[in-house]
Length: 151
Image (cartoon, rainbow, N blue to C red; front, side):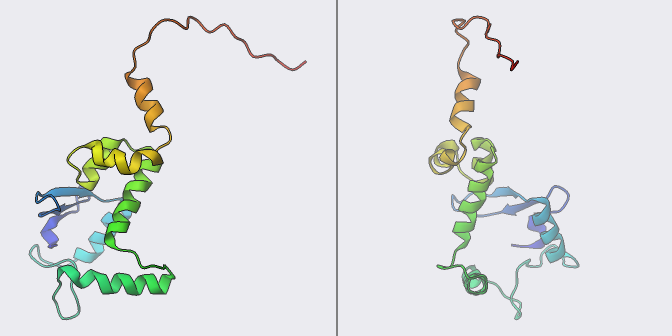
């Protein structure tokens, strides 16, 4: 990822070649935006954001630092970036973020995969979706029940 892949004004990073082979944009939290601001400070647009001491970086170079970090944190078994991706999606679902927004953030083509993996984590998702889309039938009438007061 190059410095030019980070847009600090809107807090988005561009992944040019995703798993689906298409470019996509990932929205960063304020904390993530601040991290990228620090990582890109003083670098030119074509510079790599993540580099090793020798200046290089390859697809597999994140594995060893991740394993080392898991060891230091006592996380067994060690997690991967894919697990972090699932954690991100799960946290969004548990906070009531709409499935369409989660699908967009994770790069899913539509909400089917998102719903399959994350809808169960959003307890109100099914209820809210049904209530928002089901028509009023007019069978309940006006509510006339009044709660009793303690004397």
